[in-house]
Image (cartoon, rainbow, N blue to C red; front, side, top):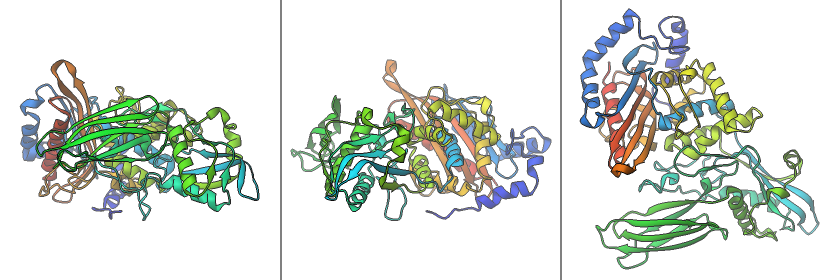
Length: 541
């Protein structure tokens, strides 16, 4: 993990030590004070220095129909340095994850680890035959060991595989997505089980299943292997020859028919994906010889059955014979009551990396499926089971954080719900509250670094003075404008922390809603616009 830069924690603690909570800082535990004489003078002076540069950005012709909301405040004092519609509601897109991750960090703590046990129902005979069933009891582990590096960190690519069907630069990570299941299988073999004569089952009853509120995999369940996705990587060879096809994770439950031809340099990529019932997937098309490998993904129909088939395969690799077929699918009706299942003898357990690593994955790559799961996991932590329960608990957290929760709206944890609406002020209130928590370094380090990694890796040029001076959450939400054969960029957003050239610490939230773009890739331009605003605010003394 990169060492925390900029003494952020010391800054935040000094706010309280100086007694600013009771004076000019109402943004820490209440509304940010923008109405005192001192604040007004500071705002006017600030505008004289760099407001013209900001206005030059906002008044570009492509924003003629768009709406902007911006609030930039000094972290220590809470004084507003720049504001534009700070109390209006904006579509936050994935900056919603700032709220769901903060609430989950509060609920679980940075060092919490998911434990996924495998239990047996039945006795083990002297010859190693289990005369009964193996049950993997899903715990909500978001990665199931499939991204864990040798040093215990969770691997991420700047463009995650869950976005592969929309963005050409998406990649899979190097760790084996089946590593966790393989670990469990080896433990079972080490426990003396050589054959499973009964059933192999996945208990996915931890919480009520839901749908993700973002692009990528839709099904939110307590069991996730490879994000419930089947990955297909297509690499060019020589013109006129078939492209090289790699797929993972491999299981008999999934069948793939891929025929892609390598064509000459300069030809466009043409790939067509078709999903058929029964986890049957078809890929057709062409890829030019000079192109980089292209990743595409398919979501499986039933995550529990997918995990079950992969678990059976892992058991066989570990030398455990299994009579049950991986093709039959999971059978929830064969499970004992949940309370009884948890009391059965354990034969293996998978322990996840600490929760801080899960937060980093979610925030760095804007992982929609995992973020959509967080409110439900918070509900489970409090003895409840639904998304609705989790969002109500998130409201309680925001009240504790003195965020004006009544001014905002959330319908999920990822940022793709039509109900998600946030004010710049509420986002800044949350960020200032988090800056004063003991676990702030975990939250801060999980955010993308401007020009360095995650969804901010390519937002500014390498020589930008603001490079690596901003750690913030991005947001992108768009819909197809079918009538005009274009796209409506409903939201491009950025909110987080910025260090100025003089070392001053700022907190900011910026939203631009409803911009017309010609193609999905054009959303990058608006990201660069927000990067340009970061460069302007970096110049503040």
